[in-house]
Length: 386
Ligand code: PLP
Image (cartoon, rainbow, N blue to C red; front, side, top):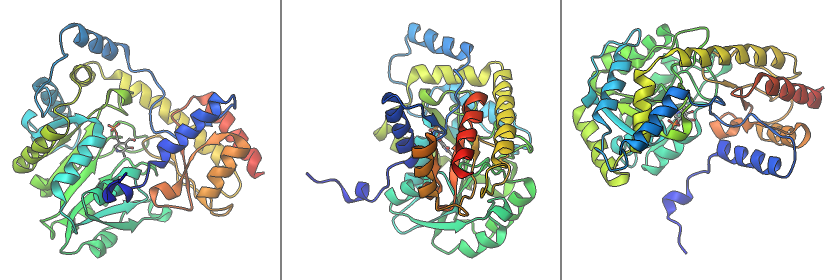
């Protein structure tokens, strides 16, 4: 039977595939350490779990408003307004809640992009942006960043990539897979270029905003120049260890655009899961020390993995400044695909090849695992390369 052409052209998610492979090996009794998946290993904080249980008991079992619970949309706006550097006055009506940030991004791309439109994506990048752009019929304009620039796109690179067909720029800071964070100076230079291109939407994926270590990440809501072109993406998955709840959102001051997104979502999924929305509301309105506690643990793990990785012959990497990934260039040893395979077979450590993110010279290691697992995984990896 037929599989539609547009689905045939998209790649399967390699990070999910590697995680599945690691699970299979574990089920077969092999002691595999998985550094492949992008999710916090912590349990969702107790007060948030209880809010979900209460929501079940309190009848949140019916359809809700397409754009999300009014009280959650208000909590999202309040949270964004409280961020240091935010210069846009957000209201509940600027928010659409969706099933994870992933669905919000998909929806924004579907709503903004016509066939043939160009979308600039700095590479390496999260696996799904390119596939989502392709699904909308758009053309990915990949801008290759490099380690010397800490994998941040420069203003010159952005200017060179912009054409009269460009309709969107996708930025992700802190970044998956590189762990890089754009500082204010770098962002200001990019924003200055964008002044000359008013038809370009800027989709700013800030899902890792609460997980930064040496530098405070700046929301693009700090830049007035973007006004109605800005689409902010965030969610509760990474900050509150709530990946399975599947709650994320998009925010924009562009009301016609937001209404179009809501129209699409109405035909697509009716609304995000109501019980999970209540839990997300509690996450945003409740005590925030759980976020800081998890961030500190990730910072210690980041320090540990960087120290251990420095001892591995042939690896070159920048110190990760955010999210929970290390992205070494392993080209001195082999290409990223071959090294990934070698690590799985010889060290029983699952990582993701850099080719999945547009950087075949690299591999991605997630340090969202325990200190003991990091130490053991890095010991095994070192043994393979010594
Ligand atoms: N954006 C980036 C950069 C991610 O790494 C991820 C998840 O891995 C997402 C978005 C999706 O997050 P969510 O779990 O909210 O769908």
